[in-house]
Amino acid sequence: MNDSSWGAPPQAGYWGPSEQGPVQGAAPAGPAYDAHNAQQTRPMPIVPGVPAHGGDQDDDRGAARLSGPLFRDDTPSAGSLGTPSQKPQEPMPSPVPQPAPAPQKKSAGRDLGAAIGVGVGLGAVIVASLFVVKAVFVGVIAVAVVVGLWELTSRLEERKGIKAPLVPLAVGGAAMVVSGYVRGAEGAWVAMALTALAVLVWRMTEPPEGYLKDVTAGVFAAFYVPFLATFVAMMLTADDGPRRVLTFLLLTVVSDTGAYAIGWRFGKHKLAPRISPGKTREGLFGAVTFAMVGGALCMQYLIEDGTWWQGLILGFAVAATATLGDLGESMIKRDLGIKDMGTLLPGHGGIMDRLDSLLPTAPVVWLLLVLFVGSG
Image (tube, rainbow, N blue to C red; front, side, top):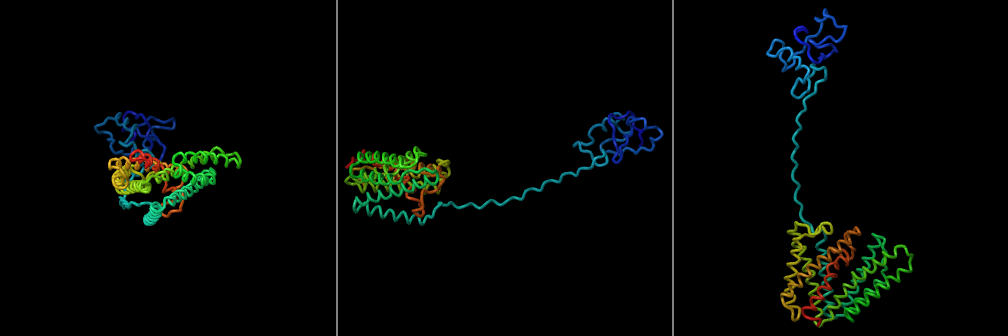
């Protein structure tokens, strides 16, 4: 086929695969073109899908087709437009299915054996001192308060650079516990006020930089640890004081146990994920259920003149305050960037890690027992 076989000139030029020459049937590109060399022009390559001259399509439609895309995907083949051919993309191999990870067993996150052993040991010491001589138990409270203050002030200084004065806090904290046992609520408030004043004065012996944050942390520590612990000593002053304290301790432990057991087994919905990711709503339900049952039994059989329905209220209140106390301690530890307040108790952490639920629960139990059965 030569250039004279295409009737009307096409709308666009067509170049061969290896030379920049005019397409057959196209208009002359310039004066160099002459009619006598038309026979030396290369023949038009056959393009699939474009009918040759003499087919059903006329010359104009064939020329118009040359000016548009030759294929449906607009990709010219090698030798048709003078551009290198593109290899068709091979289909991507299907990804090899990965085996599902094996389910992990739930873990308590602590040495459970050590935790149980330490808990049993502490319980034996507390019960022995509680029912033998009341004054010995007051001493146990005072020691726990001093150690707790030491842990709290040490972590504040290590993590935040806050230097809450430990000496006035320790002396005032021990005095608070003793005053609450001897003089009741009035003695506890007086000791609290004197301790706060001692913190303000003690800190004046150092440079003024950071004075406000140091004394603020000191007053907070005095209220949070020894003042709340004073209500345990005040429970002890009643005639059935040891049984009241035992009820307080049992219900707090039962609440924590119920929260742990139910939460570990059935916990799915987080209670406060930003504060304590391990706590769940199911665990809170377990704490309330266990504490209410325990409260009904304790009020019925341990507290004189107590009734089971009072125990239900007491148990519910204990579960609420113990959970809030645990969350409050978790909030402090998250702000400090630590997991435990100390390492004194294997499997538990520090003393403050065991007092977190007890401290805010003590005044609530003291108040409810006074309302239900009197100060005795």
